Image 1: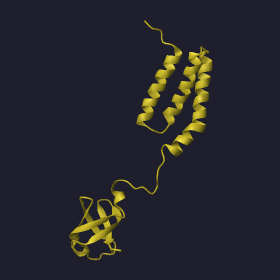
Image 2 (image 1 turned 90 degrees about the vertical axis):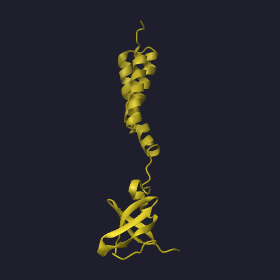
Image 3 (image 1 turned 180 degrees about the vertical axis):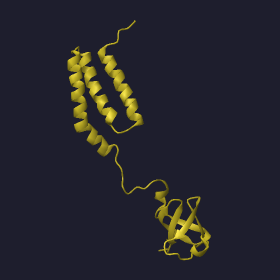
Image 4 (image 1 turned 90 degrees about the horizontal axis):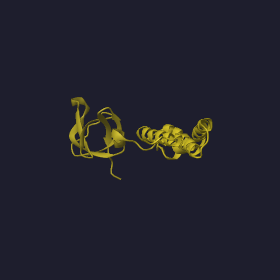
Length: 150
């Protein structure tokens, strides 16, 4: 039977932390994993457990201070101008498939293959077949205006 060395334990913990990081990408578990890697090196070189724990602490703290902010800034970059889900429809052009008439509480627009309930912001009537621009999404209803071709 094989006796497990401290450096192997540190590497197993590192792998487990990296698996956690894969599911929760905040670079938090990865910061601890960097500390574990440093400890594994010291354990492999034969240093005492106190030195290994100190190197784990130091490696984790340094990765929090230096590596984590860089990873959050560059790897988890978010573009505030990029909308997702239904909010990505804002600014798109759709075709009215059921006339938009506020007085009759009706109106449907086809946008990118999906049929949506639609209303106009100013309660104007828009006939079937007209193109509209999506101004806003309110739950499952599109707020639209008549699209003027340029």
